[in-house]
Length: 231
Image 1 (cartoon, rainbow, N blue to C red):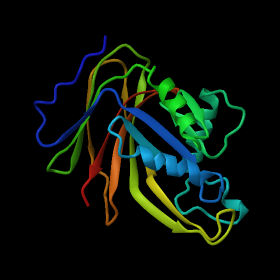
Image 2: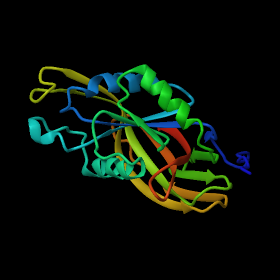
Image 3: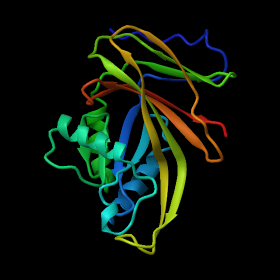
């Protein structure tokens, strides 16, 4: 049985989630098929029941445009999903829903199908708070599930690029929730867990951060929460 998290003892604003769905888009500015999926992801960003994240991959850089937001770590994460989802190849655009279902995400009907599959995954409650001393305090509930990694994901809330080469040459591409980093900050094994971590630096760009509780195999995401960080 999953128990809820009591947040009364935490000072300041607390973000708590026990039923949110994580949608991850693997994309590239060098791929002409990606803008429609990114536009669809942008429609999901402001929904309270969804954490929408865009991972820019680097394997299309060779065709003429080096995506400034691409990272080999994002490609590595996508390859891990290929294993757990039993896909023979990786591709863009690819939307992954709660780590259990994938689709190109270019049409809203595809997203509705993925969302429905994601809702079947049991959730562990996650709460996070940004304290006055600059620390993130994270609390994860207990429950019956496989052991999982606690991942801290940081992302730029908005970004744009004027692409001058490659398949999207001449286009101004607008992005939402562009992932900057993914860091493992803890491990959960069915027992309620409290963690503290220094908040990511925002700099001059509005960013957010998310906590993903993901099975150690790199598969199902069984809990998540996200919050904006002040500049």
